Amino acid sequence: MATNQFLTFTLVEELYAVEVAQVQEVLSEMPLTVIPRMPEYMKGVINIRGSVVPVVDLRTKFGLPETEKTVDTSIIVVDLHTEDATVTVGCLTDSVQEVLDIAEDSIQPTPSIGTSVDARFIRGLGKKDDRFIIMLDIDRVFQAEAEGLAAAQEAPVAQESATG
Image (cartoon, rainbow, N blue to C red; front, side):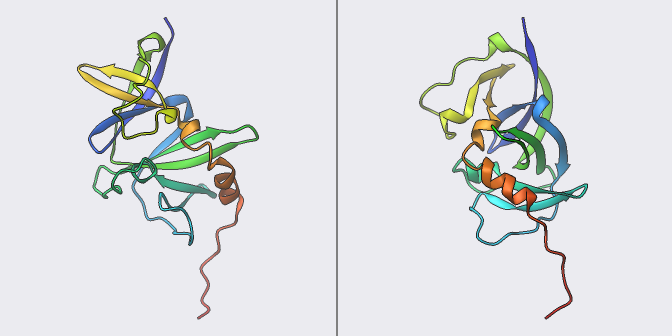
């Protein structure tokens, strides 16, 4: 029986998971550089070891209320796989929970109704104890934006200047 490891996190008290293989690192919430005219769910960019990484509020992306910053707020840095490239994105979450081993055959199909997240983004439902875990297909979550995110990553971040 094949098992995969998933990193679990919360959004509005619901438990979500992404495959550990796509997670680069988990960061505490940090100041963002805001870029004008970005979609509402795009909160800004951060600098990770010299790379520009766009940060997306997953709550806003899923049509939920904006993430409230707390001591538990975290950014999960994931690698998205597109046809042309791998794009790194930070996902703002309420809190990161734990890494779980979940058997592939124990992931249930997604119900067509009853979730606030677009069913195309959901790989299935896992289970821990008596609680369901919404298993995200993180590549699909950002499929439409991947090209724009790749361009944002390649754009140089302007250095602050003393002009004014």
